[in-house]
Amino acid sequence: MTFAQLYLYISVRLRVAGHFLFLHALDALLTSCLQTCTDFFACSLLTLSLFSPLLSLQAFSLGGSHPFYLNQSDPRTSALQVDKSLLYRMCISGCCLTCVAFFSLFLLFQGGTMSQVGSKGRQNPEQIQHRPFAHLMGSNSPVGVNNVVQWIDKSGDAITHNMSYDKGQLLVEKEGFYYLYSKVQLNAAVECSLILHKVMKNTTAYGQPIELMRSKSFRCRTPKPPSAKASAGEDLWNSFLAGIFHLQSGDKIFVTLENIQKIRPGPADNFMGAFMIMP
Image (cartoon, rainbow, N blue to C red; front, side):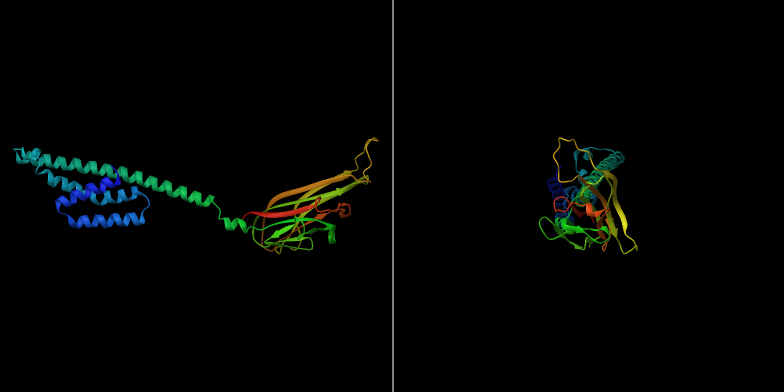
């Protein structure tokens, strides 16, 4: 039975029995359900829970005029049959009401759970647009104080958004988890040299810089066959670092390079950056 059929059935029974007060209450209940409920199962459950006892009693009162009751010669037998009929109707109504209640609650629970999961899984586009990020390019004068690599933040493909740059350091303005990366290219033309590439963090909680990532190697010049063309004394080597870290507002990220004089200047060969992946 659909919700419309249920409403029509209850309305007719109430109108025949003369229960106009209950009829007005049913109309008000239906209007309230349609305004506040988005699930017709909830409306059906509420209607059945309020009017199923009334329907059972009304069925009992109308049953007295049924030929089945008129043909009973023994008053005690007639009363017994009426009691059994009423009991059966009440049991059936209770079972149906229980089934509808459990099924409706199950659907409501499932719908609420899925909506919560969906709302958690979906991210606000405005939040994504306001996530900080930065991409810094290698400077033509990359050598800084204390072996800190210098970068370009406002030229070419370099960009900063909700982050700032000053003297080789990238300033974090919003707390969250960030993906950090750095790539440098060096000229290891000498026989052997130590190459130490680090990504560091300065934070107000500690007095000393904190090492986040490190690449350490002992690089020696690669022998070349006599047939190979000379490359102006260059033997290039690349180092790349990347990782995810939780950063606080006010933290400063920078890159250091041992033997920084060996770095090969250029915006395409050297870069560093950061972008927030989760608040």
